[in-house]
Length: 77
Image 1 (cartoon, helix red, strand yellow):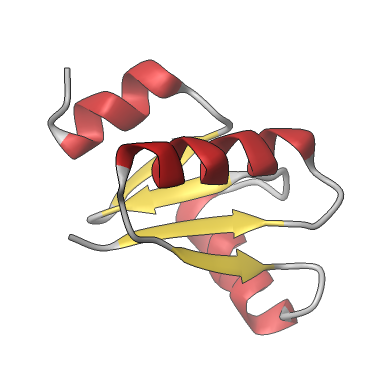
Image 2 (cartoon, one colour):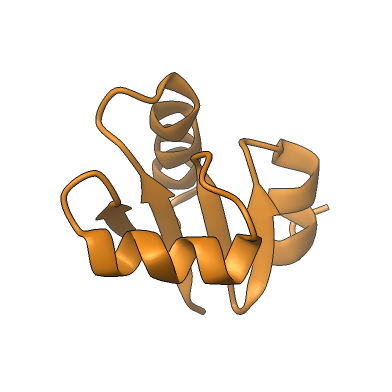
């Protein structure tokens, strides 16, 4: 399973999303788009927007911290 969280250090919803994955025992790649502009561009291409968090679960793009959509993408519902 591939999970990428596009985030910034100052985003509270990013912290909530990462804490949720840790709580569920799900490994994820944390990409700080404020430091990595290439990855920031990748996030915009995937999601069509600049806001964070953007979560990529096996190619399914979730914008914001939406537990229901995250659980659905992970097969946890």
